[in-house]
Image (tube, rainbow, N blue to C red):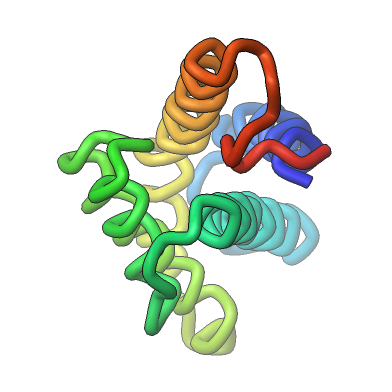
Length: 150
């Protein structure tokens, strides 16, 4: 499951890189462009949540009380850097705005996130892939509690 979610996150990231070229005024006037941006941001962040939950479960880590706890728990387990965990927690908070406050969503905020924060998706994928690879090497090539289930 983790590798398929990482693949989806990579694909969504490519879409978002194209969409980040959309100017703010077009986002305001083009409902389809706005919908695409919001949806791909949402599903990208949901991939992070799903990957994090799967790793937490596979590694037998403490269960998160809320989604924002996921990156903190991953940082405690040295899967992702502590400073980056705060950034991921903010991304997850942004997802909550997209999902629950969609009717009053501030397009300036959406556009800023699109322009300045989507690099976090690539960074998250990189940290997870590096951790999985290191875990495989440590386990001697066996999938022994490394959280990797395809």
